[in-house]
Length: 466
Image 1: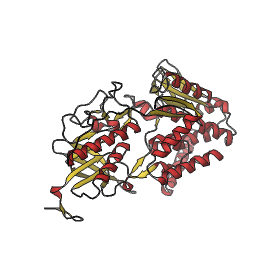
Image 2: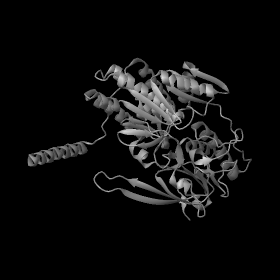
Image 3: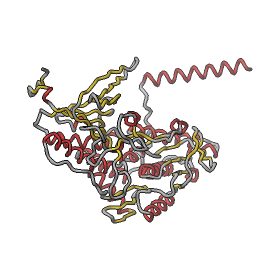
Image 4: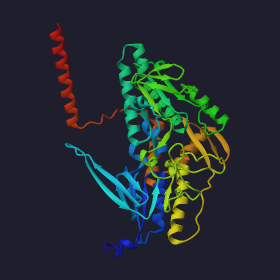
């Protein structure tokens, strides 16, 4: 029989726990399992994640605005793997009957085709926390023409694009063209959309004031569009109204009950026929489970999320748990499914870890019955809204609470110090408008060659016509 060399334990005697997904939910489960089974090598723990880092998503808008440095909101997953095995790979398939997961590790060769290596992992207990992806509601044109705010790459690409718009606008002589370059549309009135539009608006206006003197601040137009009847539907009406008022005061135009119906590279069309000329559409209109989650042979809700019972177990499948954005669990306090927030994901992870440990070691399982401590949103510089332990707050106090809470939630002291330093620097210095062109020297040379060839072709074509 095959043995674990380090501890001379027969593999067949081990209980294998496999965690899929390296977000808030998956990492919290991993941390608790490692702490409990720290010296028990009869328990084999593995994690699979498409990225090798935990992304602190609540601070993504601040990365897009350049307030926080990119690496300061990511933590390597291996920093949490004290004894767990980690695979940076994509989940290809999950077989509940065989208790097997097929993963794929894609290697991007610099000068050749990608190499794809598949591997099959066996498990006794499975934790599915694969998160979700941006929901475009079937609108392929929006998918192709919009920017999203779901990943670190999204924030970097959006920041580069916004600065590119500023650079182009500073050279544009035509007023109408300059206005379209300086028009930014964010779709989604939830927390992600509101916080993104607040940071985007501040970045553009500060940059024009401090650096782009050829651009008239009157040419800047920032829109927040939502299909619903109010901003931040998760908070009370009075807090929603306060947030709406403050966003308007900062120069943001808010359009409600008028969803996007069509998008191109140069404009956005709304349901009522309104057309907004813009080169920048940011889509924060919701989250949907990944395709692999929707296709699993288990019960799903109407949105495709996995239905779990009160113990966070997938209904009808023993030893399999689901949590986070890909799971649907009813809140007994409201009668509606819990919203896909980081706060809920962490609390769900505590229940999953406890029930896994109880199943393996014996003990009482606990059900998930969590009442949110509150909800906070940052709506611009030194402004916020929120409900904390039933108490409504807004303005500077809410903004300070938002920052304090999320700073304390960062996983390591190093990241806390780095983010705190970034915030401190931002208070005293102008925004950084450096645009990082992500090209290697070879790629840049190829681009120049291509441009030169195109120019020659155009010249030849013009000569022949003459």
